[in-house]
Length: 318
Image (tube, rainbow, N blue to C red; front, side):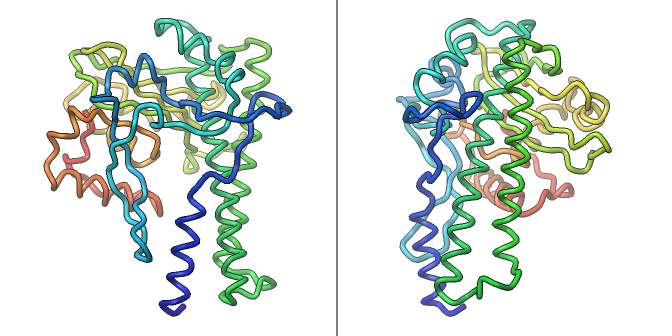
């Protein structure tokens, strides 16, 4: 690929970052109302505890002309942070009323389920949107003569793989739709870590697979929600299909025990498995340049593969 072709692809990628998929993912996917920028992390109660001057900090790509995109920390308005266009206004309000308008109760099975469900809906939206962008990128390569379109290639296989991932998440969401409609919230298990005497530093809404723990019954999938509930208390909620309780416990076990390493392990897990987290500017503004660089470098590496060997205390997010 010559420099001109590379510049064209970078320019195309910059334009393609704008959301392609816009669809209300309410159960049944039959809603045709226009989706809104729905929050995956609760705005009025959670982000309220994190924001400064109406802003929070997130990681995203920075496009500079024809240069390759770089990861950066960016201050975003609280009304834009953690949003996705995968639900219409009515269904977003109806589905998540119990966690958006009521105080959070750690023993409330419905609230715990809805936290998990929101993470899955947001992940499905991202997976479909990413698959569409990857496919368009592949088609652009064919158009530019970089692929012949008839022979298997890494770019073509990547696009196919993205659609397969989106399909798997879609199938998982359908199973959760059934749990929701039948109010069988106990089919999902939750483990909660309470961080007391903890200032609000960040909030997370994530959903990821434990591919290394795959069994004949399928692949365990975990929801991770981290959020402050007061100025001195933060909750870390792990959610998963009860059928995979043993596999998930093997994975999260070291994170459940209170010790000097607990917050670091949770921080590292967040950076390894999610891009959907918001950071308090109050906390972020005290970070050293070295800490910011270490986090960005580690985060970027995990987009390609999970590096289980890299350890650095700068990865601490609490």
